[in-house]
Length: 105
Image (tube, rainbow, N blue to C red; front, side, top):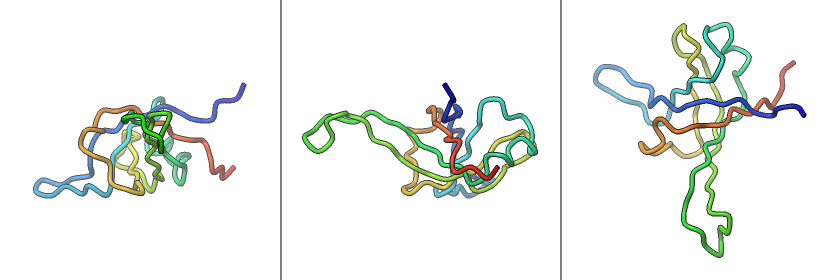
């Protein structure tokens, strides 16, 4: 069976010494160690699955936040992603799924 996603971890927000940018999240993807490796993932979809209270509207109890990888960050394979809604601070350190679509091969 083919895998449809790679694993990753949310490192935090993009930041400088005095300012942080909560609309851009930094993500470390498993197995990516250089800037050249990270170029394959540009434009790919990212999802963060979090647990929420079950309700009639959401019987599964899972909330999915979707984003897209927009550029590389540094030389160690970290990427920047923008989500439809900014990730909450609680998501830092949380696992994410980096989907292997849309494909540009």
